Image (cartoon, rainbow, N blue to C red):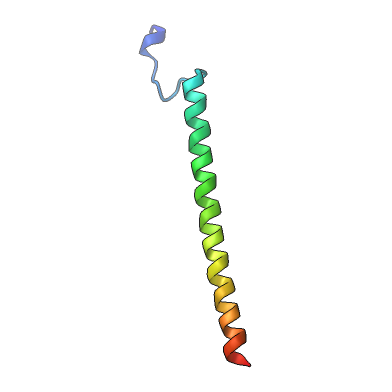
Length: 56
C-alpha cells in the first residue's frame, strides 16, 4: 500500500493549515464554553439578587 492510499483521518496533519484549523477549533470551543459559563453565572446572580430583594 502506498502513502497515497492511507486514510486521511488516521494521518496526522503536520501542515500549517491543519495546525491552524485545529487551533481555530479549540479556540471556538473555548469561547463557547466561556460564553455558556458567563450566561449561567449572570442567570444565577440575577436569581440570587432577586431573592435577596424580595425576601427582605
